[in-house]
Image (cartoon, rainbow, N blue to C red):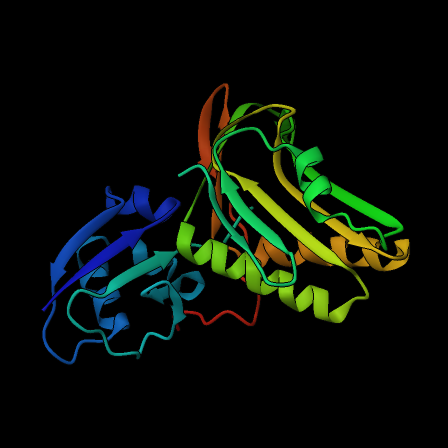
Length: 237
């Protein structure tokens, strides 16, 4: 049977491709598909314990069986974020991916309600160096369908845990210039304490849960930024 395989971040560089269609035997698992490619690209094995797998845009265990025409994704640790992809929840939460500059004012406008007494905004921006090494620009890529689902699920969990009204998360993709916003989190609430707490939790969890990867381009080279998955995500071990 035939399945489609996707590679992201540094794994794409190792495999020399972002996607491939491959034939696997009946009864094969997601882990078997990984082993197939690890046989051709031994460096993949070096990252096996930190790689997360997905089947049909949902996180998957290595022992999960695959079926014909499945979409299998191999994802390195996250390091985060086509234009216009978004999810709006029934509660009014807003989650989006964009290749255009993020308009924080428009996010605030769509989330704010009359009963709100606080709006907290967090913006992550591109900085001009890492460890003294001068950065020219950043580049973000992601597994878009899974990223959006995960952002929306994360937002729902945060809204349930804090006394807030609404939350919005928007992440840039593609090239980010120094000083530009790469991610914006907007929280509205009747009171400021809950809004601050929710925004802080949102960025901390987003960076370990949402499949978005960052490449830094320096004056003397480039590198994928290594992050880490949250313990709740299923690893390939």
